[in-house]
Image (cartoon, rainbow, N blue to C red; front, side):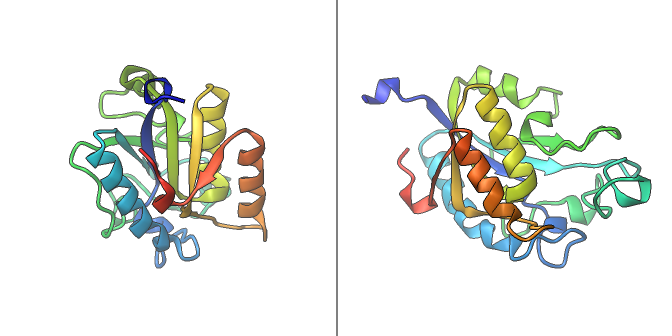
Length: 199
């Protein structure tokens, strides 16, 4: 395949936020281990002149997503709280596109495709505007927001590669992350490690 027929790539960094890292309200076990490989990936994409998109859970204080209001999850990543901030070790390029998701009181908003930028543009439109056909995805958590983002991308016909050393799962049920990875591979997504990236 010559380079001209290779779809343009973008990196999607999913929800690397304080509340999903150790000590947070909804901590993913060893969730902070994704930070260093994602920093390397983001630097590689920036050096190649390729877009980086970072999502944040950005929940209103009162949402059906939370246990007190009938949802599955403890209160986490509430808008404008320290828990909703990116992990302090995460190094994103200056021109990273920020998406906010989970902002609707009625919807879980797991997928990056549920997020919007400051102008209200959704990821599907951003991808189209940028001419991107291949998403490289890492972040938290493998079995929820990463899984949902990958499956939505595949439904839209995008090529997807999951950065296997830059994801970590909640595993509410033992094995959830492994099942999620099997599901995304079955949907046609590829996996690789950050050091295997060829941009």
